[in-house]
Image 1 (tube, rainbow over the protein chains, first blue to last red):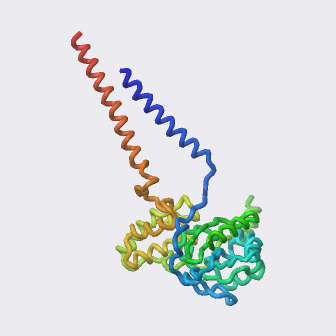
Image 2 (cartoon, rainbow over the protein chains, first blue to last red):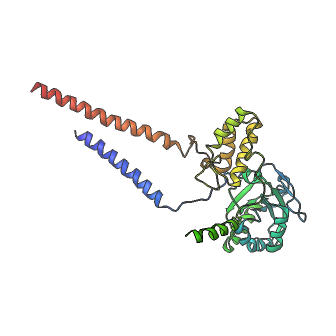
Image 3 (cartoon, rainbow over the protein chains, first blue to last red):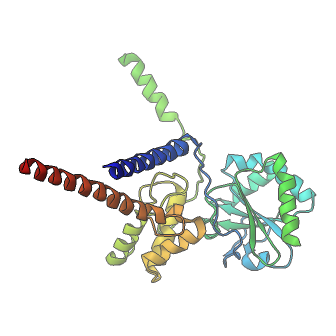
Length: 178
Length: 145
């Protein structure tokens, strides 16, 4: 009889702990960010044609030439991408080599976007079916990846780059170079 | 009422959808079925168990988001190229983690999901058995009395 009581209390305690866990998780704000599982992995093979005439396209080989780079995933139809333009500009002025992948974008739209917000990119690949985006585990625009000189992804920044993210990204880039 | 309805409907006709999305056509296999019905069936079944990353409560089979279309294109072309549905699922999990799959796999983080129900069942069974056993015992005592 006594032992049964104890067993019951254990069950009650277990249920209470479970509901406590539910309550805690429900009270936490929802995290919509899907982090890439490719951080720490080498860039998969790809070869994209140029998105605009003024810049060459982008392939895996371009990302394994010894120099660490920022890879910006953007689109002209994406509003936060316009908002992060000054920060990309600041990163470029600080010496970052920034390459880009334009997602589901038309050449004339990318040209108009770059004319309006500036062009900090040395290469822009045209990804019409999000193949590179899916291959590197990016789930939206804009996202910025740090790629080291061997073509290994070392860091992922999800969402637009805010002014206070700039030093952090430069630091990640420096770490990728050492 | 009717007097207002007509101009309102006329105004509706001029509303342009806000273009937060691109103007590119969908990927070739976003809305096109594979020629082989057996492969299409495999692809379809898989698509219903993969999460759309843009619209996270929908499967890529249910979503009209361009990214879901691009994911369906990947699923169909990979299945057509001879990959098994499990290989395609693994490919996506290696990019996005377990989150992308609606079909839970046993892994280092998900094993409690599979073990806990068994533990609970065993626990409930034990309590029940003891109770029933005790009542039987009580009955026996009553009979004797």
